[in-house]
Length: 119
Image (tube, rainbow, N blue to C red; front, side, top):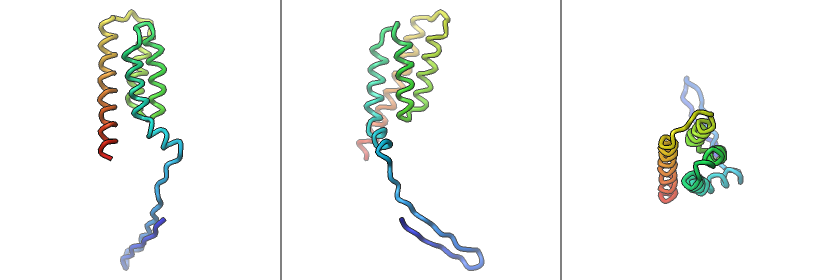
């Protein structure tokens, strides 16, 4: 921990405390596993049959949300709700939505992997 102070006569004193940033073991595990979890989600979504797609999207959306992929999780869970809405679904539209989500997830994975290489 570091302590600094800056003082200007007539204006006051600023005291600056610097604390080291430590990640908990759980936070380290989450960060270390993010790309693996995302890669598994992509594989599961790509490989699932149309009949299993609702369950897969439900499971994948929840699991990647835990790993801080909040926007992607919401997108997948919205897709899951739409699949389970009870309306008659057009096979082409289902596949187009699946492919759009897969493209977004792949871009996110590429971004994570590039960041790891840069660090």
